[in-house]
Image (cartoon, rainbow, N blue to C red; front, top):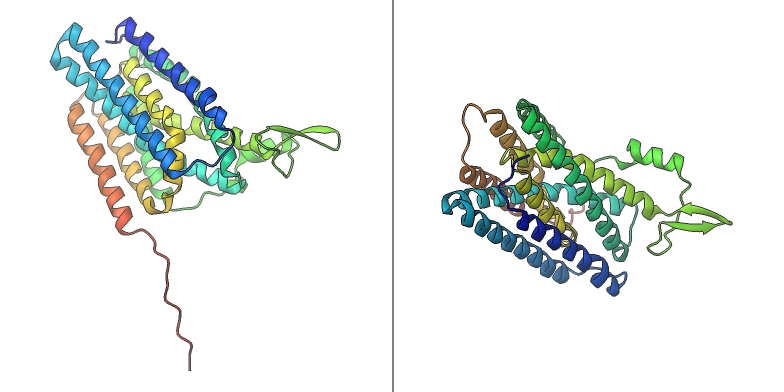
Length: 324
């Protein structure tokens, strides 16, 4: 698994992730269980985006020192494109999280802990998947075609499923968890287990954690191949993915307040997946430039978001007239 990143930059990345998790689990834990406001979520979203751009700048500098400006520009664009794709696909992930929290009526002050644990699980899971994926691509070039076809089919499936309410009650994973674990009807603070009638049983928060983890596995299968269509460098794939995940908690609380306004976003994400999958299928025929890929992804998401805002459902204030 060849990578252009020097060893010291790997060390910086690992240190940055440790610091980020320390902030989430130690510093923010002192706040206790509380509802995250839109202002707080916006501020943290800006912090995480700024940190990602700063790291990309450091990455550019590292490549520039060893290989020159031309390659540094290309590699930093690959990071930016991968970051944007992962960040965009995470939006759909967030809408599913919102559905899970709503279904289980999870109080806002408890949602933060669920997302924090989910982020750690996502980082570990995706690191393993990316390293395995990098090895497969380096050993078996044809795997790229499998990834490409999978992304195209996933995009088509996402398009047809867009706008439809998923039925969480019929989710097989939820049914299995309820059979295996006795679950309390009530929350017990942020605890995953509680005592009822002298027996230790799970709280609904444990089911929520399990479903959030399962959801991330499903979305990782979509998003990771999408970044491999941009670059095969495991460092770029991993770092762009992880930096996008680190801001997931703040982005959730930010988008949860305006979720209804972006009701068409799933259609845009479906088109992005089809485009990225097609790019991967054409890799040996025509390699679409990274800058063009970035422009297409930004244009698709921009058009979708603007169109969503223009066609956002509005509350009707007119009352039907009484018949005479």
